Length: 94
Image 1 (tube, rainbow, N blue to C red):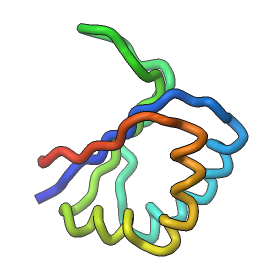
Image 2: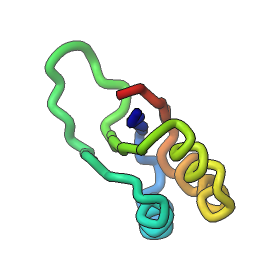
Image 3: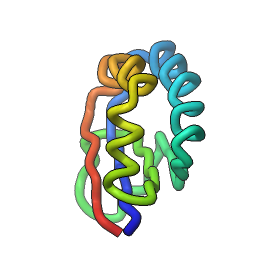
Image 4: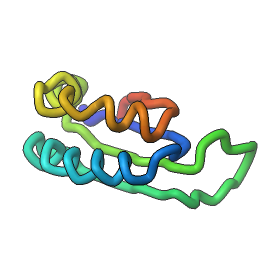
């Protein structure tokens, strides 16, 4: 069953974020992850936004997510995301 990862964050270092994205894309491609959406200007339908940057990723399974997230190549760049876009990263079932 697919799972979806939702990253929400506030950009505090654009250059570091750009470096992270350039390095993260190949890891996503290698693990056959689908980037379903990314926005820095989401439309608020209800409630109040805490963060302005959202990314929605689709993984084939929870195990596929763990293979990507725990992979040495992703762990090597994770610090870039954590420092450049503090926020939340959650998994939801499909």
